[in-house]
Image 1 (cartoon, rainbow, N blue to C red):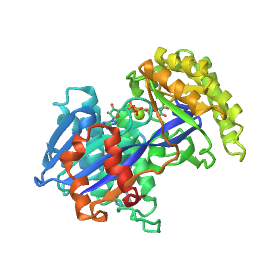
Image 2: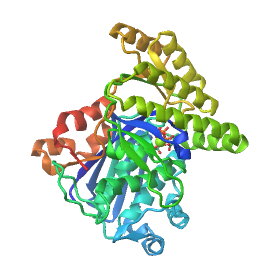
Image 3: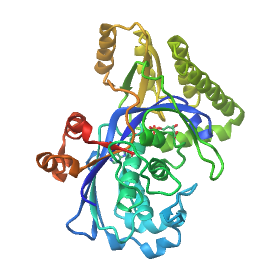
Image 4: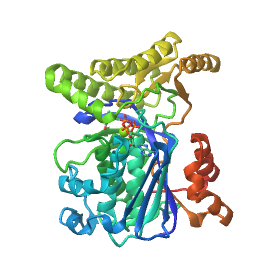
Amino acid sequence: MPEFYVSAPGKVILFGEHSAVYGKPAIAAALSLRAYLLVKPNVNTDEIVLEFPDIDLKQKWKVQDIPWESLAQYIRHNNDAPATSDELVPEIMDLLSDLLTDCNLSLHYIACRCFLYLYSNLCSENVAGHHFCIRSTLPIGAGLGSSASTAVCLAAALSALGGHIKAPVHKADDKVTLKDMKESDFIDAWSLMGEKCFHGNPSGIDNAVATHGGAVLYQRMTGPGNPSVRTNIRNFSAIKLLLCNSKVPRSTAELVASVATQNRKFPKVSNAMLDAMDHLVTDAYLIMSTPFLDRSALLELVNINHGLLVALGVSHPSLESIKLISDTQKLGATKLTGAGGGGCTITLLRDDISDEELNNAKLELENRGFETFSTMLGGKGVGMLLAQDLSADQRESKFSFESFAALPNREEIELSIGASILEQWRYW
Ligand SMILES: Nc1ncnc2c1ncn2[C@@H]1O[C@H](COP(=O)(O)OP(=O)(O)O)[C@@H](O)[C@H]1O
Ligand SMILES: C[C@@](O)(CCOP(=O)(O)O)CC(=O)O
Ligand SMILES: [Mg+2]
């Protein structure tokens, strides 16, 4: 396959993070911030090269170093296509661990393990070696789903290289390679396996939004083989939002594990809070699906949701500082978003807020060392950009591995590969 890009959005969880892991409904929307993955055939066809500059990772493997023969007995198929499993297959993880011995940082180990797990399931020894470079305009590890957008990009690219899906067409038609599954559902299912490599027990909401885009009410169904439920929400564009990053790093895996510990220790208390989140999300969904949005009721639910997350033990002093500033400035209602413990907050803005009030608040937040984002909700899901769709000049500049890897910041990434050639992207 000639060179191509794939891209997938980050997300904000409006209501229901953490409770989503326990099978309760949650509401999330795609962000305009995205991950981009460039895939180029390697002249050295037996070598796979990863370059993930955002996390300072460079790694190489020989295609034949992957233990294809031993792996074959554990890789499952359904109608000739690789089939996902409810849990990561321990034998596959074990066989791949020999290829990870030189990954000394846990950040690198986890990213490489995710890549190899998807590669060994979706590709084969017959797929020639490629270069892979991921760049993200999302802050990493900040609650905006950078892990899921990475997993979706990898699942899409490796499914295409393995021949399980075709490049999307510009206009939707009925061309589907897989017999029983839409191609986007195949990407969604495999990106969930990627998310499992990143944080053990994901609900699946982040990768569902990164795959399909838009805004959804999502509910994980517990029990093997039970498909999750995804309901599109249309009436969310009226929601005005301010995003703020505390810049305090944290790991989703650790926070999800800490909620599980609390749940084991105080099951009645913890389950009552998770049930409250369930009711809160159902109420929020009802409000959001009526034509005239009752913004004040939605704002109240944001505050209740934050309070419940504090009680689950996933807030952080930096998040409380942002909330205090936002509440003092009467911006609207603020809650942490994503796993918490640092990372980002969202503020649903008051209807009648003026530009001046908003700018003053942003200035105060930035003076305190926080980062604010203007972003749009509900964008496109996973997409592909093919070299053949660009002019020869554009092809040369946009598909240079070195230039892409060296883009200095999110504005330049967005400009180079997003905004300047928006119409050339195709979506599954
Ligand atoms: N651009 C990227 N390049 C490489 N790995 C990435 C990138 N973005 C995200 N990741 C992976 O995702 C992990 C962060 O995921 P997580 O803790 O779930 O936070 P979040 O999904 O909220 O950003 C990182 O440690 C890294 O392994
Ligand atoms: C805490 C959780 O609800 C969301 C995690 O999102 P993020 O990785 O912090 O962007 C976990 C999940 O739903 O998988
Ligand atoms: Mg994540």
